[in-house]
Amino acid sequence: MSSRAALVLAGGSAKRFQAQHHTWQDKALAELEGKPLLVHAIQNLQDIVDEVVVCVNSAERKAQYSQVIAKYGLDDVNFVVDEKSSLINGPSLAIMSGLQALSAMYCLTVPCDMPFLKQEVADYMFKVAEGFDVAVRMWPDGTLTTLLMILRRSNSIEITQTLCALKKPRADSIPRAASKLLLISPLREIKKLDQELKSFININRKEDLAKLQSHRIEEEAETDNLKLNKGDLPVSDLRLIREGQKKLDEGKFLEARNIFASCTDDFETQNIAFWAGVSAEKLGESLLKVPSAAKAREAYLHAAKNYQTEAEMYIIKGCRLLADRALADSLWYQLQIK
Image (cartoon, rainbow, N blue to C red; front, side, top):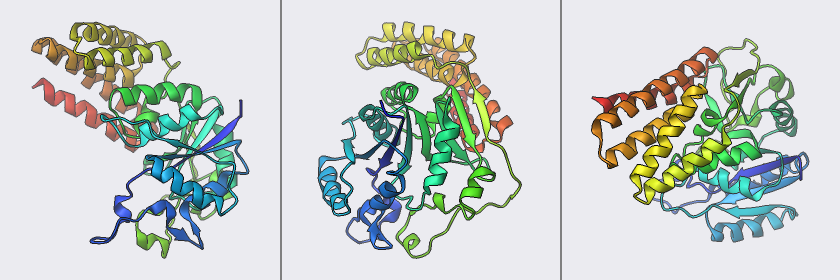
């Protein structure tokens, strides 16, 4: 088993990169300094990882990209095509598909539109991520770059499989679901390695190719990496949640209800707020199928309270993005109660 892997995400639609009334252009193949963005992303990491996997959403892209990178002598690169699903697409599906194709203990996910990621920065992220399920960079304003993460493969496979089964495609659900989360500051060790923080430049629009802009930081005070320990990842319960969703999809509503009720109780007992909220919302959904509207409202109340608890944990750490996501979920289920 290898120690480190890079998972390059190159299956998106790149909507912001497109010019109005023009033919769709594949951003991964857009050239910067004489090379496609995809080639930059691979070359930046190939010397510090044991495996490189490029995740795409079609066999056609796989064939096209294979030909392109071969021109640059990048032979030791594997490709994986997203698992086909009519119910979900997006980052969680891509990351799950990639993780299943890897053997490394830790994996760095990186979008193909980050062409200046320094090896030293990636190496630092790998080192500090040891022992955590997820390590992700947090800016001083509490936002995250959720497509650039270090993932512990064993636990992250369980997390992403469960999120995909529940039709939750957002990348920021992955750190929310993690039991041991590290929020990496760019203002201390990383800035010593990359003073202008060019590693984190994203090419979102065509004009970004000509005018590169690094992330602006208003507050220059150094901050430490922040650790969140939410207990041990309840792998057996995550597998049970997936079984409950399967029962729900098959129309076996009573069986689904019993599974989600059990999971809700377990997670609340362990104070695992995110998964307690997820289980409670699925319990409410299954109760509406029975139907039992009064009990469904009670389940949604549990979901709202658990997401509120989750949000408070992130507020204490100054993690605005995850707090906002949890608060939005809490508000949604409060509205379902009325």
